[in-house]
Length: 77
Image (cartoon, rainbow, N blue to C red):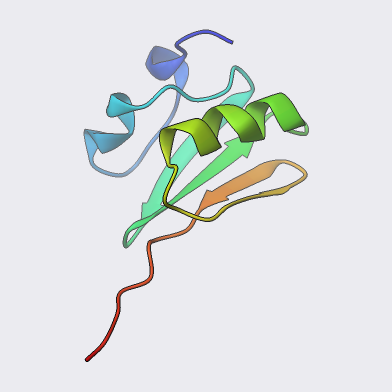
């Protein structure tokens, strides 16, 4: 996997440039504190693990051509 940030489309702020995304990443969106990655085809387990390594305290899920980095839960008092 290589650094593919120059070929990724994003309509959001440039914070996605701080991370390495899987090669298949076509699009990165930010919805609140979550990232949603879309691929040209399906992501694999290596792709999921690459993203999980960068977000160790977040839930990261894979659903075919979408990887979601969920925001951390905030504790309420």
